[in-house]
Amino acid sequence: MTEVHNQSTPAQPTSSDSAGAIKHLEQAISSGQHWYIALLEAIGLWTQNEETHNGRHYQYLIDGQAFDWLLLAERLCQAVDDRLPEAEKLALLFHGQPPLKLSNSKFKALIGSTKYRQYLNYFYGITVEEALVLAVQEEVRKEKRTLGYNKEHNLTNEVYQRIYGATRPVLLKSFRREKAYPQLRSISLTGLKEFSYWLFNYRLKHCDKAKVASDTKKALERLGANGSHRGLVAAELEI
Image 1: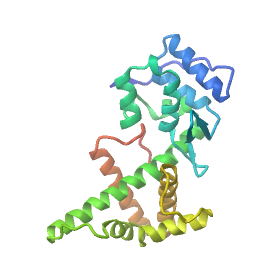
Image 2: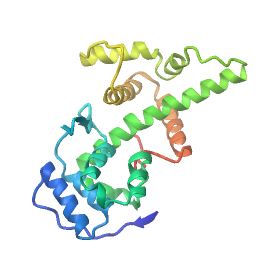
Image 3: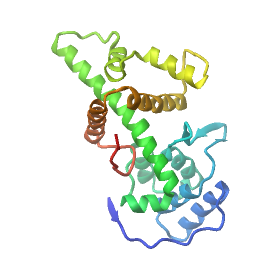
Image 4: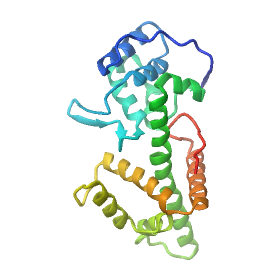
């Protein structure tokens, strides 16, 4: 992975709408700029929080606060797909592994302060929250195996009970009631992301601060152990 710190800031394009972001991406790559830097600049120029493109709905901003930058990166990569190194593109989109290592300040400068804050909201509120559930799930499985229990009946509910003090169905019902969503039997991928973000805020409000800090550390350690943070930077969470 190449280390990048002090690259000069390129001239900003005149158009700041979403079409202008794609045009900038195309032109920057054509002019010889590294595709990843051009991609981050295009992300900084993008203005839509959600859109429907080629029959697929993209929601880049979850709950008006959490920016799913990799989803937008996927959308933008489609516009220049034939110009990107396939291996580097897949490593970024599927494993959160960028082709260049940027400092936090450089990443923030390229995508903009607002999107950077929203990105951190997504990282801690969704990526880390999902990792916490998986980490506790592994703990519960290990405990059950030690005790000689191989069945996973009610495993999910036990995990959610340990983290949030309530079962998943109860929490999901509360989430939908609070958001005035219908109580359906299924949930979309976007809905799951929003639910995770709701759980993050629920945990901050209802759990002891020491437990919040401990659980967050546990989730971050799991992300590190699995070699992917689904993001680029590490930041301190103020609890």
